[in-house]
Image (tube, rainbow, N blue to C red):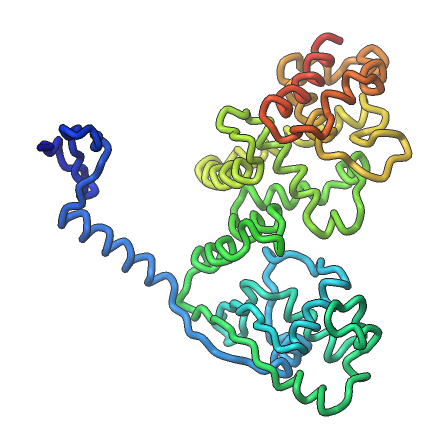
Length: 379
């Protein structure tokens, strides 16, 4: 027979090891007090989510998008759907396949802020009122090349009359509730990359700094990327990784998205508690970018004419430089020809250190960062 070892403050009790060896001290016994505490927590959290479900016709949704009745908040991502994806969405709509819910928040002035679904709504607007031409359809191949106006009038009516369900958080739902919804809808989804999710779910002073620095002209010059990568918050990702990995990898478990998300969440809280933290991190970023610009002839590019920035190369050079400057501050004033990074950035050892195989494994990540740090410190 087991004996109760004590009752925890949350209303659970802990049991000692039973004679059959199946219980441990960490096995909880749910007490009435524990049940009551859990129920109260459910009630408290449920109060934050006050919503109703409705249905809109495609015509109404497209009209409201065109007329500015729906608000796309600042934390939402830019319109990044590729043309093929727009076409496939319209194909699904025409075929009558189920369309995911659109989530809104009812603002005080009665307008609806889009919590999730802006890509679908913009595509509807572009198809009904713009120049979206369908292409490369899988099932409705004969519609390839069609615009909405090319369809028979009867089919146009059927599309306008299709309905899509919406979930509307009313105006009493706080900001944290709708950002929490955005995170839960999008985390792990291919529809929103991790940088976009962080913008939406982790609004706060640290993320505001990330967004500010992601627009830095020196960063853009040192680390060029395609327009598609830019629109998918590629610079947000680089800036956040610079800070997250630079602060240490003790809690890193080879899953960068989880690690960076938790880091950004913690930093938002830290920045709120410490009003000077924002300036400290801003200074860290700018001093490092100035050093890279002065010392690394190609910046974060592979070559002087490169138009892309390998993420592993950015991580190794930026964070390695920051750690080297932290260890040897005099490097900031040392002549670039004395540091002479060309001696090793063009070599096979460096190429191997930043290679893609197991790129996100902690050992590889630390290896490429420390490769740069040690070469700079030894200059």
